[in-house]
Length: 356
Image (cartoon, rainbow, N blue to C red; front, side):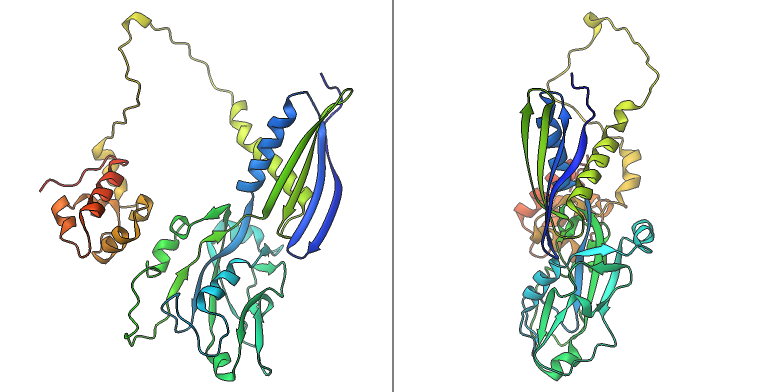
């Protein structure tokens, strides 16, 4: 049994750039056999559960297709979106708690006082106006403007949110409804409507880029865990490991909850024989009341089936439960495969399509 208290120490810190930080840390001593368990736990939490900030949507003036190009702009729309995904934020001291509690996302726009006199001009993060957050690297490139006309017409709006890990835009809270699902709709180049479209962007919230650890055993002290942590600059590696430890402690708090023990003695000979699967019984009257609050995005359908349902104004599970198999087959571009997919997805919620 190890008598010395385990401590976390920073052995090395190196900042390769504003968005690339490296730290080497040690934790120990711990009892033999505990090093691998603790190391794996902290590594998974560091990679998956630490909160971060990222771009979840963008709108460019006059752009209705993510595959289009802008006159006088060197980058294509997709290249601009990829640059936006790389922006790294940290909350300001005054707004961090407020934004986290009251706003699922905030807006950022190009600074209205921005004056461009020399061309080509590289639009960087510092040209955006956003009081709630700060940029780790204000010089991160967004787009290159080549002419005065392009500078006058280039209007950019960002949606910035908080989250954990990597999240597809379909799973971001409130984003599918906000975007009106126009991102993957077919684009008709002959349309004359110049209204801009807000495009959702898969969010990268992870502040940790990479984590390695090794366990070394000492004959006297026990085991020591050595961590190597690479971050995107929004958090110090030492603080990241401490935050991961706090998350782990919070997850395990449930094991310390004191509950009143109730001993129930059963005659095993009278117990019914149970199958080797779990049967889920749904109370239809109780569950239907919540179906109008569950949007079809939760079904994670294929793109074709999803867009067909949206065009038919079928938005929630309650709307979908009112359709029959034949009704779905009548929808435009909706085939047998899509109908089978919808029926299988509904079965996970205990819903069946109406009988014809």
